[in-house]
Image (cartoon, rainbow, N blue to C red; front, side):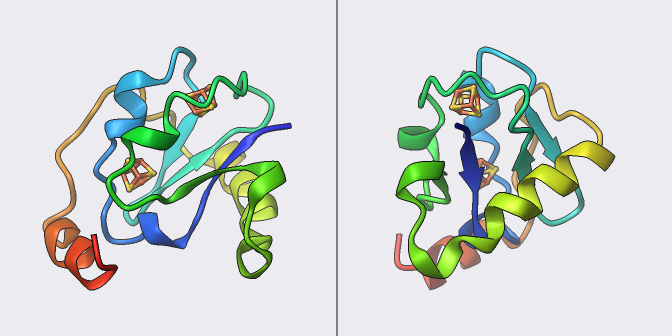
Length: 101
Ligand code: SF4
Ligand code: SF4
C-alpha cells in the first residue's frame, strides 16, 4: 500500500507534507509533488497536513483520481527527492482559494 498525491497539489506545492514525513519519499517537479510507493511507510502523517487535501490513502482514492497511483509511481522514480519544506509556489494561495479551501 502507499499514499498518493493527487491533482489538488498542482500549482500549490505547499510542502507541509514533506515537513512531517518520517522518510524521504516525496519527489517534485516544477508543479507538484509525488510519493514514491516503495519508500512510503503508510504512516498517514502527511494527510492532515495538506491544506488542499491532495493526499489519499491508496485504498481511499476517489474513482476519478485513480490515475494518480500510476503517475506517483512513475514520476517519483525520475524526479529529485524533496526532503525539506520549501516555499510554496507563487500560485499557491490563489489555487487554494479556487479549490475552496
Ligand atoms: S502539502 Fe499538499 S499541496 Fe502541499 S506539496 Fe504536499 S501534497 Fe502538495
Ligand atoms: S504516509 Fe507517511 S511515509 Fe507516506 S508520504 Fe505520507 S508522511 Fe510520508
